[in-house]
Length: 172
Ligand code: AR6
Image 1 (cartoon, rainbow, N blue to C red):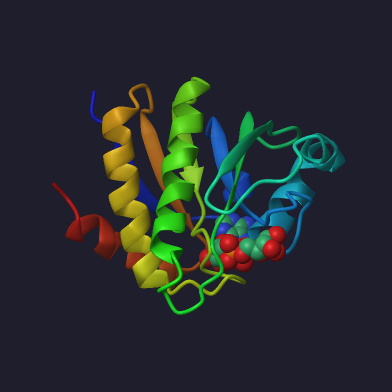
Image 2 (cartoon, rainbow, N blue to C red):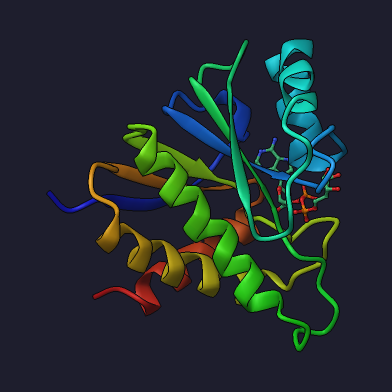
């Protein structure tokens, strides 16, 4: 069965999917942006669980429960800080999406939502990031069966438009 891939505009903490992805920092101990929103909505049990994980390297991903969220799990990934684009940023961002898909598949997660990783505080240009995200998710899904739906959860209308273009551009 072909996986549904779509973009929508929403607060990711409101989504009833099996797992939401968090754009975290390497401490995994919370922060601003989507990370702060996820920790607020999941409650203090999430921070308690994150403390046991020993952080996470850029480009990698770790799984926790969703606690008070509708989502059963949170996949925490650490995107690269944009430093002009010639410092491995595209490869590291692709790795965030690929590792998250692999972790989801390994844990029987069928529906998964991503925020626009690295495009807020970490300043990765949105159009470039969307192309990396869409391309990487499509190819990672080929190798990871069982995922039924991937949602690109955009927080702004502008990001939604960018994703709709990226999804059309790379459509097979
Ligand atoms: N739902 C969906 N998307 C959101 C939400 C939300 N509730 N809130 C913000 N966004 P950012 P980064 C979007 O800065 O660039 C944190 O402090 C936002 O509009 O959250 O990867 C971490 O602890 C943007 O499109 O993440 C790290 O230190 C996207 O989420 C650092 O920021 C990502 O923006 C990570 O920076």
